[in-house]
Image 1 (cartoon, rainbow, N blue to C red):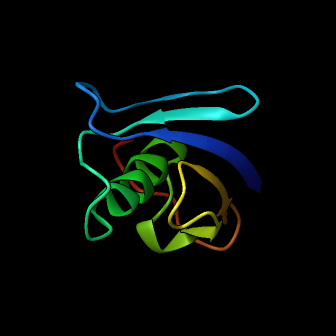
Image 2 (cartoon, helix red, strand yellow):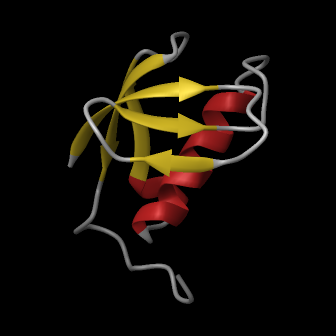
Length: 80
């Protein structure tokens, strides 16, 4: 599954808002890839997949990103 999203770094909350594009709030600032890493963690938790099943396809240095989530190829994370 591919989704287009807008990342809001430095937010007071971490959450996912579905839409077009999706909006994802992250605590981390966009320095040294920390916001991107937190984004991937948030999305993996939201979709209940392993962290390795989520990757950034485009927009690594931008707030607007395209992300791919492998919903079929990984075991679901237990407890979500």
